[in-house]
Image (tube, rainbow over all chains, first blue to last red; front, side, top):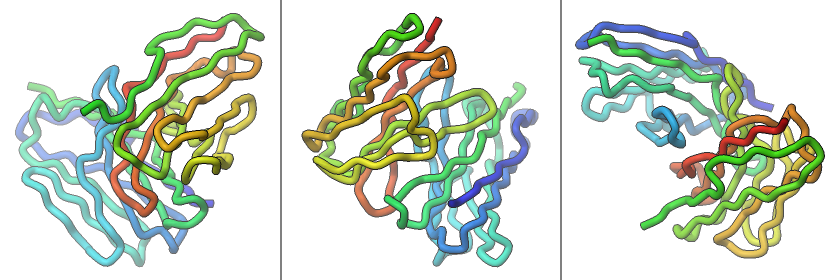
Amino acid sequence: GENVEQHPSTLSVQEGDSAVIKCTYSDSASNYFPWYKQELGKGPQLIIDIRSNVGEKKDQRIAVTLNKTAKHFSLHITETQPEDSAVYFCAASSGNTGNQFYFGTGTSLTVIP
Amino acid sequence: NAGVTQTPKFQVLKTGQSMTLQCAQDMNHEYMSWYRQDPGMGLRLIHYSVGAGITDQGEVPNGYNVSRSTTEDFPLRLLSAAPSQTSVYFCASRRLVNTEAFFGQGTRLTVV
């Protein structure tokens, strides 16, 4: 099955700096890559996603890039704010095998005011 | 506008006890799933369903049962709780094709 690796596991940045979280996947059939944000005591929420026919997608301060050849995708958060502090998960799905999402192990982001 | 509702939020069980975690969604989503979240291990799929009457195993199904008698409900049953099942459990639902998954608030389960 699919194997998704996520780095780093923890990340601290100063407010206003950028944060980058990277994920790699193993199954070349994967074609959907969502990113989820999980705040303390809550369930994960989708913040951005990208499909394999697109190389980059932006939504205000958040962007995701995808390199299909290298099988990696990254989350970029610019102008970080304290409310960006949370755990972030990447995931990959091929739409096969019951449409399973395979999640990375998470990155705990702390934005220091 | 409830989305995905999980009950209970917290539960303490003794080893060997059984219980059912409830999950309901009001978005008419075909796909529902249960995950467990453990420190450093991300979200691991326990069981999933692509529609009423259809269920299948995920990555870590042992010790858990599910059923899907309606589109809305997808309960997770622990048959004989073990300390290794201490975890935070999330239910999620979405459309069948790769789209946004909506998660419940989670159930924190402790087995002593």
